[in-house]
Length: 179
Image (cartoon, rainbow, N blue to C red; front, side, top):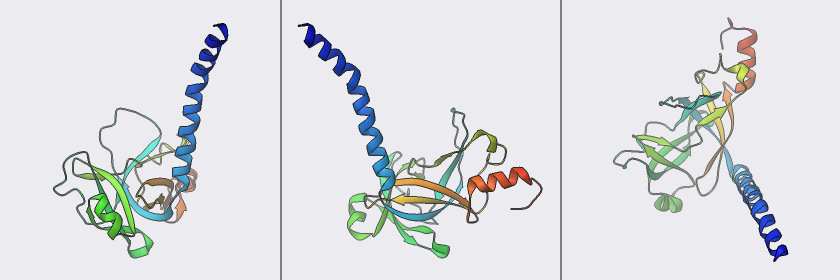
């Protein structure tokens, strides 16, 4: 009886750690999977009650209205094609199941109040860059990995081909210099 209680306690302590480890491995694998693309980004700041050192943005996928006639919070997909300057643009949107067979690169997301979001639209940065990264700098692009299933993982953000943190360091050192 005593061994049974000890085994149960050990299981109760180890089980959450095992779940956390499995979740971490799964998250890392999804982050590492997929092809690398560049997407243009623009500022996006809905009311957010959480404060922190992060940049809120949305992907600029072109002029296609991906959320036209799509109910709020409904899953949808975008078919992406390489546009000018190597960035990806949405060619059309629709049901993920339909696009899976007809499109080479799909991007999964949800329509939230007529805005297509993938839930990867946040970039965290060190506190010392808060003054220069309060807004998305002009000519910013995100380097992302998109899996065959359409899952996206943000890798880096660039401002005119420079890493955003290098851009921020330079802006702090030389605040009067133009981009």
